[in-house]
Amino acid sequence: VHNGTIAGFGTGIRVGNAHDVRLEDLQIRGEDGGGPPPGEVGVMVVNSRGVVLKDSTISRTFLGIFVRGGGSGGNRIAGNTLIGGQNGEIGICYNPDGSASLAGPEGDLVYNNLVSRFNIGIQTSAQTLGNIFRENNIAFFQQAIQEVTAGSNVFEENTSIAITP
Image 1 (cartoon, rainbow, N blue to C red):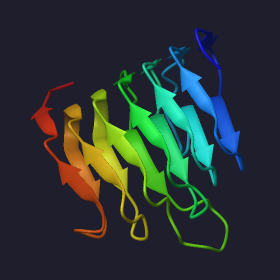
Image 2 (image 1 turned 90 degrees about the horizontal axis):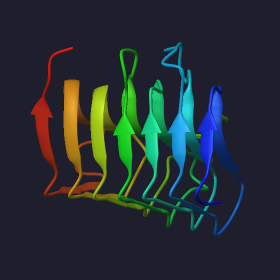
Image 3 (image 1 turned 45 degrees about the horizontal axis):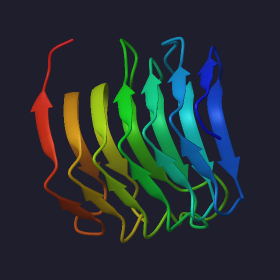
């Protein structure tokens, strides 16, 4: 999927139980409706492998990019611009899939993204393991990076700055 625009939605794009999906050069605009979680989501990836999400703009969503489940891994999220709006909670979120399993995504590469105007820039759950978050720029309201289990993922050369609403 490439060169498209999606606006006014609950979840802009949902990739579920899939392999080798490419999402490129998209404009995804929410309505800044807020939560409760998961609320309005720009892109949700659930138990999927080999997903490439790059060079897209996601704006005015509660969650920008939401990667879920132990079946998710080997994904590449790069060069995206995420802008939260007034009700943005988390720019990039890594969590279990909501089933009985607490396993989170493993082995993703998340780099060169601009994450701005979310309460939390990047958040990972307790069993999200071995992902690399590199060279992301984060302008946040409350916290740049929230890693529930310290040291379970790699965070390198990310820059962050606190902003006021």
